[in-house]
Image 1 (cartoon, chains in turn purple, green):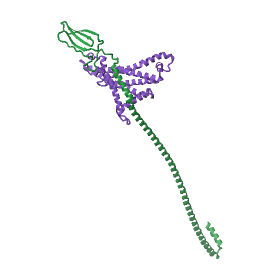
Image 2: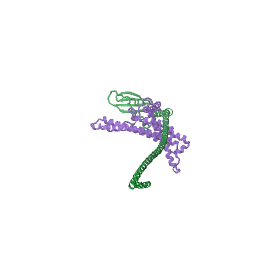
Image 3: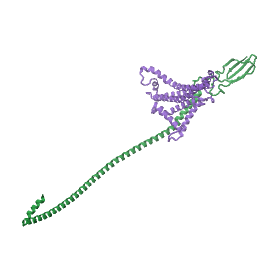
Image 4: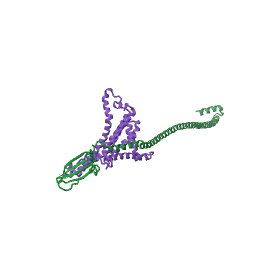
Length: 255
Length: 235
């Protein structure tokens, strides 16, 4: 009975959404909303009096700026990296605001659980840290990415292959997959426990104990929803801090 | 026995029901732009139902009318394939957001933060300077206090010494007065005593001379009487 009522939908039906209008679907809506909300926060913060102690939206904006500066840039790139704060701040806010709709009722879909945004951001980061490497080290960046300074000659063939694959393929790939897979897994888990709860509640069965047992998947659903709040923040933080590490490493090969 | 025959040609989809009584009906035509090739033609035969009642089959565009969240069926790309529209909207949104943040939003907020931090820094420095000034003033005050206390101690000491000297002088003066008066009193007493002794001596000498005269009939010599009286009074 339960097995009959519990039919997990096809994967595309929980990931792909009907177009709201031509070439614009819910993922696009969330991405645009993330950019608009992020901009609004800073527009409103910019209108507040900066000379007094910040509160409300100004406090939120300043806290995020200080978090990026002190928690990411200073830890990974040092003082010279402070110029990257606006980019890293945009990256963090955009990813976070794309992650959070996964637990917002009616939206219930993290935009980063689709491949497009993670892959775009990863490729952008890849292009940026390559560009920074060439800007700071010139053509030597190519050799430095394959053979970091100080590698013994005997190890160069092995290290060269590893670093080549790591710098040119694994980094963007891992950035993409880490964000995408974590958000997708969280989304599927939420869907699974929501459907399981619904199936137990609506099951046509003589075994009346099954309905109260719906509390178990419901509890998991609540717990995972709270957990996804943490995951949304954590994934944005990880993506941003790795970006800072890659850019910092490109600017200073000795790191 | 009915059979459904589906013709898929270009963007046109036709479904025919064919029965042994030669009833053929075109029941739906739909846009099938999702078909793999325009020239492809597909024919599928499925089992129908028996009877002569009309059968209504509706065909709708893929996903149309479905509740939000329902599948767009099997022609969709795999779930990990990035869709171009999502790439464009997502990437475009981020690029616009990042540029806005870089050139407009962040500088404005950061400028305000820096101005406030500088103001706070200046306030701290001013407070530090004031604190240092206050500490210097307290130190100067304490130094002055020490000097004043030392001066006061000196004055007190001098006053005490002066007082002691004055007291000593007064005491000496008083003692001298007392000694002088005592000496005068002693001298006066001695003079009175000497006078009394002289009077007693004279009286005793006179009595002794008269007694000797009465006893011997002649008056003893005055010097003998004086000597005898002196000897008696000296005992």
